Amino acid sequence: MAKYERILLKLSGEAMAGPASFGIDPERVKGLAAEIAAISEITQIGVVVGGGNIFRGVALAAKNMDRVTGDHMGMLATVINSLALQDALEQIGRHTRVMSAIQMHQVAEPYIRRRAIRHLEKGRIVIFAAGTSNPFFSTDTAATLRALEIKAEVIAKATKVDGVYDKDPMKHPDAVMYRQIGYTEVLTKSLGVMDATSIAMCRDNRLPILVFNLNTHGNIMRMVSGEPVGTLIS
Image 1 (tube, helix red, strand yellow):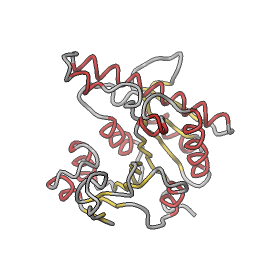
Image 2: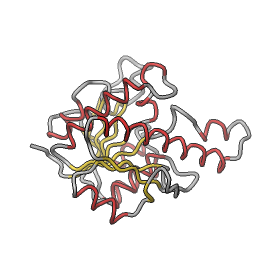
Image 3: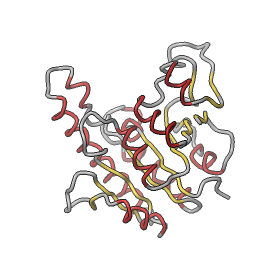
Image 4: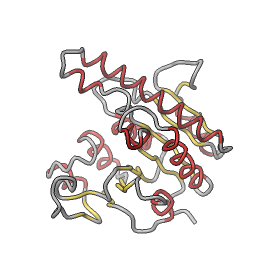
């Protein structure tokens, strides 16, 4: 039994890369697809994938590349990841649609809100690609925007740690994890879960965020089933 009828799953680009942390690892993508396919049996799911495993516009903007150009290149990287995930899902028999905020009719459907909702209602997995199509907005913000538009009940933010901590657990062994925390506290303490724009949008629209560890197998299903996984921001 699913706790949520419709969710938006936010994956980082690095989630597609596996141990290498860059490029696309077919085995890693296959494993992700299997977990997503399993939860799609009990809930409607939209997915937003980052592009950091292929291209980081912000990093190159710091090296004198035009920021707008860099961000557009980053958006195209998310399309590559989305197509890879779609292929893996369809290979195991799950009907999947990639909807792109940048029109590219040969490879993806254009993003149309009502069509996206219809796909979800028909049990299809919808992958939202190319961010918001606007520079200066992260894929976290794109995920929040799409979640609000499709009326998702929660944003499931997949990370490589167990939840939200008071400081970076990778650097500080004594970091303490929160089981539940408010939006404003995340912003005032600069906890770095998602960018400030997306946190503020969730706060203003009362959209909860569940931060969980993607590397623990089965966590996606546990999260959808309502088991106590990760940190709830609400």
